Length: 234
Image 1 (cartoon, rainbow, N blue to C red):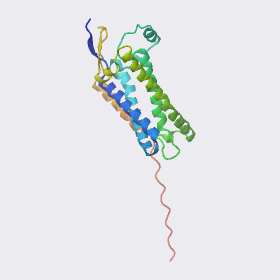
Image 2: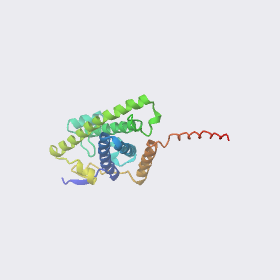
Image 3: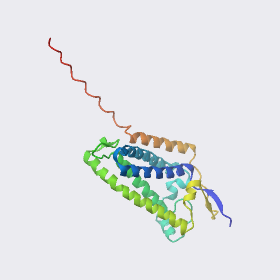
Image 4: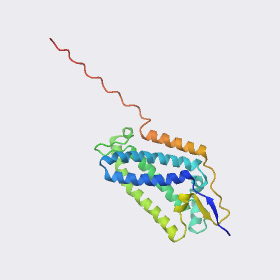
């Protein structure tokens, strides 16, 4: 039977994927370097928060294989995959668990960074929402969580290499081109995720960035008036 090419990953998912990769690498480098680059690290964290907000909304209103309802696996799907009986495109059940794990750990990383501090000169834009002790605790977890992210990303890369070299299934190319060659005629191309859905997801992402920058915090109190000048006695 002749293979057919179907649409799998829509453009917003592909842009999200590669942009998130670049921002996470940049955030890791600036966080490790510290110093004056910690300011850039903070801005990168805010951008990552916006991207994650976009992906969470897109997972509801996006195209077929971007939706959580399509790829989040239940026990039956996982069991079928382990028996070699799963047929589909997009994220396989184990890959879906990896994606959910990465999204969850990155949401925590971005959220904890917004209230963190370095006890020197940096405070997250939402630092005032928590106590100093809570900020110190979350700052510690934020630093340690970097290595969890590195481990998950490494497993993700190893899985891609395994599929490429053992199963002869290139997972990277569809994430670049958006399409995949399949032999099963029952597999349908991705649908949905039109302009209205994109505008909604982008608006939520913009709101998330604004809120992450402290847009919902009350304005700081005005500075106290200067002390009255003493009238010289002549």
